[in-house]
Image 1 (cartoon, rainbow, N blue to C red):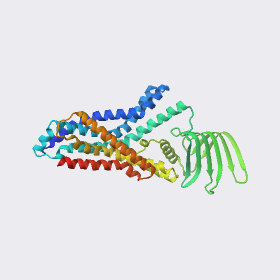
Image 2 (image 1 turned 90 degrees about the vertical axis):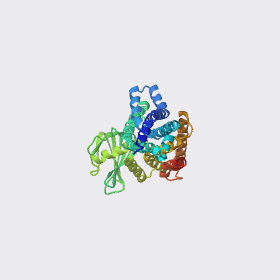
Image 3 (image 1 turned 60 degrees about the vertical axis):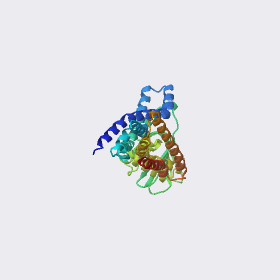
Image 4 (image 1 turned 45 degrees about the vertical axis):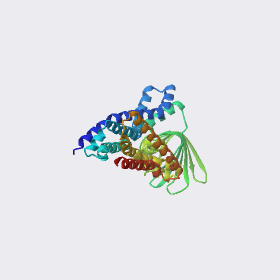
Length: 376
């Protein structure tokens, strides 16, 4: 109780450097990651308003990744300022210990970690999804008609009713171009019908509308070819509108490679679907690391708070430049270790969970060592 004022003072010291760090590292991250692409869009005539809209939608995802660095900088500068002004020495002289000095930093780090997890789970997926849709529209506009091959199946219960392949498609509009569909009878494992259409659209209900369609009925004794300008393909009874809406929404999400567009539950479903279809194991491992990183990166905020607080407590008076330098060195070391373990995880040398949480484990060990040393 008698040291509650210390927590208030330390929290006030954290606010300014933390907000400064959030702004600094977020802008640096946005510039390094997206500036070249945005400049290219502007040069090619994309309206500035569209570019600004994409930038705003990408900010939550970048913010969730820069919170740990901002927390590290804030804890270094806050404890360094109090240590340099002998306030930490004064606290020790009246019976305080190391935990009394840094518990506000640890508490703030924990709260911001929880905030980062919620941000990653509920805000980032929606914003990142919309940003990726806008970027795909820009790519379609610039490339006129780029090819993005698509394939999926429509099931009636557990049985495959149609296998669909398309040269290109827009999942948001439920429209596909250069479409080939192979139909199967429920009582036979062999194909019974083949469709080709220049364009196919699912507009709701239980049919897919086909334009400039060719249909071949296969009875294995002969082939009957029918040509129509437009026609409907009836979908299986088990694949009702709710199933089809969910199917296309899932396919749309899977077509976007950015791991930020899915939350934890959706990422798990995506991994399960990739395993069922026999996807490339390296792609699966990469997605698994994206799943674990949704927890590992926010958790790094709390760990960086525990690392920065004892590092900032020094016997001699130092300038803020030393705090900046220490923050940059630690961030660079964490990034290098994360990149190295990500390579090992993608290649299968270590489990995906270890590749994601390994740098955090090293950070916790470093923090514990510092706390023991400073506590003596």
